[in-house]
Length: 112
Ligand code: SF4
Image (tube, protein in one colour):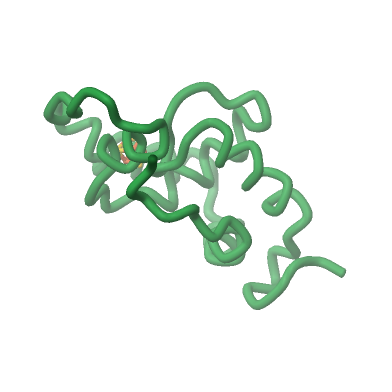
């Protein structure tokens, strides 16, 4: 059983609206430069973690988790592969649905 709570993907989608107008190349540079995974491999996660716990472990404390997620949503989703922004593939696919209908000018709610 996961120890990580189910992420509030609607809230994550709303939070990402602040990055909507950031150019993709700038997001990529931020993630390349400051991503925790770019600083070296994280410690090997303990065996027996759920997918969600594994994702949280890999991205724990990453200062650019939101730019990483925004970049992934722009580029690969819904065909996402792997862990990005501390979320699992399934979480990112679900997030993509909310993100793709989110009004970029509305950080309070989704497009009506
Ligand atoms: S959020 Fe995770 S995958 Fe993305 S840059 Fe940070 S450590 Fe890497």
